[in-house]
Amino acid sequence: MNLVYALAVIGVLWLIFGVFYLIRHVSFSRKCPHCGEAHPDRVPRSALAKTLAVVMTVKAYRCNNCSTQFIKIGDTD
Ligand SMILES: [Zn+2]
Image (cartoon, rainbow, N blue to C red; front, side, top):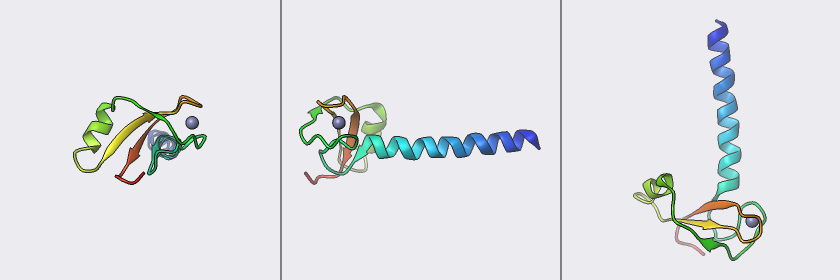
């Protein structure tokens, strides 16, 4: 019973971590999701971003201001 409880707690913590990760590292415009910088540099896509690119347009960027790396999903600018 304790093992089930521990696994549930770990699962919930991973979900919370995942939501915060997505908020900080995924954007639908070229603006940095962390600080709002509008002119980030293009960088090579990660393996995960390349996998996502099979089904949607995905570009990877690195913010000049705060160095956050994020991916932009979609064609809009
Ligand atoms: Zn930034």
